[in-house]
Amino acid sequence: SELKSQMFHTYFNRFLSLLNYETQEMSRQELPLMGNREEGLSNADLVITILSNLLSANIDVGLKHSLNIGYHENVDIRAAFVRVLCNILTQGTEFSSLTDAAVSDKY
Image (cartoon, rainbow, N blue to C red; front, side, top):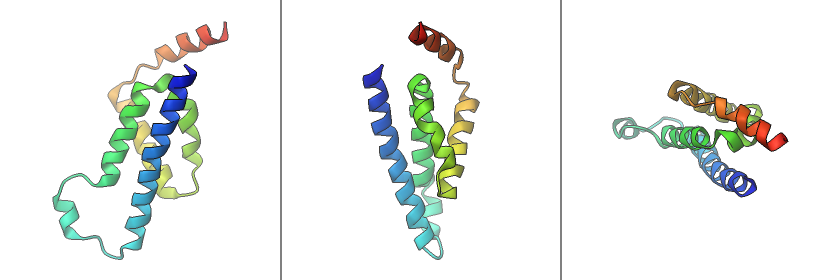
């Protein structure tokens, strides 16, 4: 479980840094290019989907690593994290396994 936790932390932080980079790039541009809208999903939307799937698949170890993102200094990152949580709840992630895992780890 420790290895799974470390792997989650590595991947989650890597994609989070990509999201952070994307929000910084968007703030540098004064006017968004119209071509980006026609391409479909933005990079930020794709990263949010990736983070949602990653957290949903690893909710047992991922929740403790990711909750502090809700307090991130960048408001865009906080908003993206709320979207990640919303996606997870919409997908219907099984939270019942958290209780079982927490009990087995504790005892």
